[in-house]
Length: 506
Image (cartoon, rainbow, N blue to C red; front, side, top):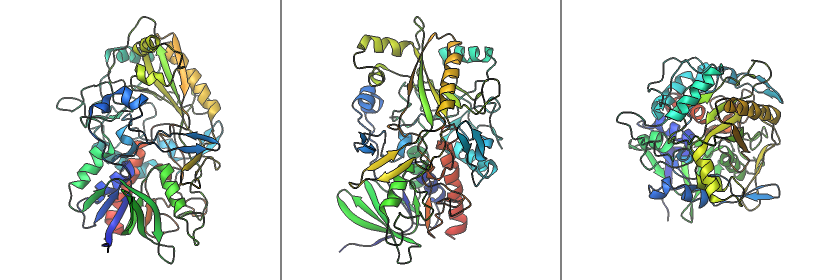
């Protein structure tokens, strides 16, 4: 005989969305349970090994997804803290205009049901929780702030400081990239050289486990069960309320009952779980009377650039300190459709290049390239498209179809960025686009809105179809903007968590 487990709030997923809600509810009278399908990521030497992370794929999920007939192993990471255990620490606010309808080359990026002002105080709180370092007043597209950054920007290392000056000489306005790193006097960061796409062995990276989940677990009302895969959500007879999450924990299937459910499994897996939970009353899946769940997948249009100089070596350890938004809303002349954001990538190494360069490339050449490159990330907005879908295959695996949009503007941005970078003194620029295999910025699969006919969630991320289900991860995004999504997920999750604490759970 098993004991029934009841909680006031069950949070599915321990990444930024679930972690931020948990932190808001920590210390309240509500009994909160976080369910995470992955384990706590071990602290081990392999955390900082390019061979282990990029060649052996030690931490990447072993699952296989499809995209039509194509099969691939996605860049998914299932651990307490979610994908932030491997992210590059970029913590941008969306621009104020990103919340309104915006004309792009391929069409209109839709407006959000909330505006920048609704999120501004929560952006500020999220920056505090993550210890974001930055400098206000330099980004030409920066939205209004109620307060400056609490922590000074991470200074450029010498090679990058020189590039920043040469960018300014072109009339551009480079600025310090806002980053969640515990850097500076008394900070943990050692500039180890393995930050972007690596887990941090010393807790210097501001990830969701370190900044949200662990602080929440310090309160007695919050618990965590890791290695617990949620297979489906169970409704009551009316279909209006979720009553339980059916989980598989170390091979055993059981149900966790709750009064309120917060789904934060990531845009792809949240959509898949809602579809797996289909019933006779909800044949297309839960929260899906509008038929938008699993549609409008977005992931940004991104290309990696390697700037090479035949003589100059790049000894930079932590390069994620520089960004450019001069072409965010137009070209260099301020005309034409928006192009996007340019920021530095983590420092590439020979093992990382092994998968990016042809197999016949000599190891010595890869080492030379890595030693002489400055590595950039070119990002453009990806428009939502109804036929960009997440679906569940008969065997339970995920089928991900990405209908690419706004690619003309992205190609123009890559060409423009290449010219900009060459003018900083790097005569060779190599490019490599990112594909569906790397869904790092996944969003949009359960959009929120003002109309239940065209959205799955209301402006506070509650499912229109259910009284006690909230979806709080990047699923809710109606558009992707052209900067990293992490801080916006955190801000909305803190906003939703505050609403639950003060309005719903009283």
